[in-house]
Length: 419
Image 1 (cartoon, rainbow, N blue to C red):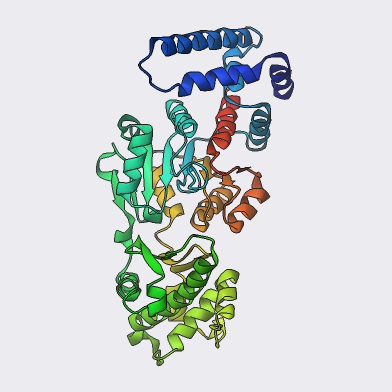
Image 2: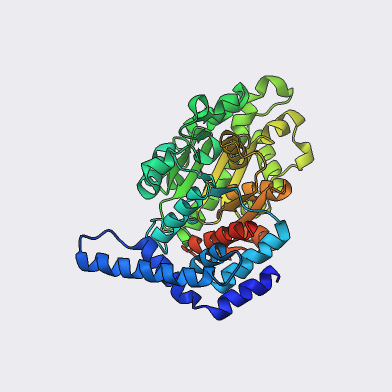
């Protein structure tokens, strides 16, 4: 009998909703000092085992089918079956953004839900490495990761943290490769540009902009965030203003760094116009903002000197509507960080689940897609570019704060690979 028919029978003939409720209760039962509560938990655990045994006795691979029924809804299981039929393999690493992906300020009070954390421990116990991939600092990520998953799991040798959007990789338990500082490979010219921009970004900002934004990021990722609610009209105004300011500041910094190599005068607004022309051509959103702010480039992209263009090619300008404007090194990005993490974790033939919501996560998704190295998922409030990619691949879009539903699908996908 084919897997489809067996799974159809599983959900038709057994009370899988009850089985799943019992499993969730047993897994997530809070620690309490109560004999009555403990008795209730033990009764639920006994009933869970009885119901699992009933499933196990009805299928040749009964233990696997019982686990599937206890972990996922019918829809989740058949989505997993479609994925496994398409790719023919299991997921051998998780690559997970955190903010607005595993947790959500609008739905989970900025905490990773307990069911999500428990599922991550289940993947870990099944031998699936976990790569946390975030723009946050290492100290922040280590703190909430240890708090949520436990010190033993984080230091098990199967967890890696790609932090500050790819600036570094931290993989406890791996000796000399435990901490990799990827920025050490950048050359002096790129370092000079970022040093120039960072030293001037707030001190030289116009008063109205400086009073309306704050600085995030690191030495090689410079991000302007609004001092207003993200998504609001005031946030849109200051971020659009900030984008134009960052593009111009970057142009001046590149012109200064290459002053002795250009052979042309880059003073005044010339270098700024090169940056506007280059980044407008590279990103339609940037082009729109520049045009709306009266800062459309006066030269064509082809007019940008090759030496300048080659340096722009290594520096990213990103715009997030009413949220952030940033520049960052394209050599220090999440895909490079993820590849470095997977190397340390000894994942030789990766097929990963990538979960994220932003353009930096999109680059990891595109790498996985281009290399046939995984699948992508995103929350429904992710950036439109991310949603476009996810919908065009496997349509793995989940509700805000409900990363657990997607993790259940992939968990069942891996169980199906055992059949």
